[in-house]
Image (cartoon, rainbow, N blue to C red):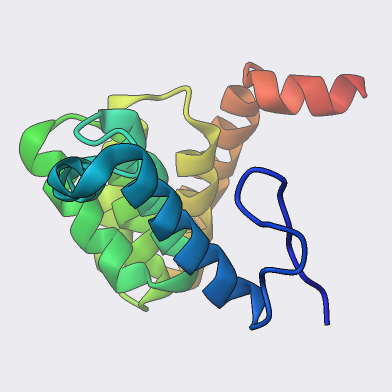
Length: 167
């Protein structure tokens, strides 16, 4: 069995159980030994009160909503709605809301959200492409063709796509 050892926390051959248990016990012993009983609880309090990642920023909220979109579209829509309560004209949140509604089968709701996202930021190619796809799903071929044309126009200025084309 593989044993995790470190000269700082393990004496030679001190760990006889599974590595996870040895690491937990040794870490706790190390903290107690270094901090003492009085500060041990303070250390636990500080550790539990420290957020895992920065909270409260728009970028973090949008990234979280994007991650949710792939696995739980309903939660992504909820997250996007919360973002839109705080920042009403946020085009990327509107895009995520539209994509989440499309994933859940709400074609009209997704077209509404994607239209608002595209009108808020006309240079957002993802919004135009998703809007065109949803319009095609609804059966509106003319509007879908116009949205595809807007997508092509916006995509020519997208730095991500320009970098991919240059590669």
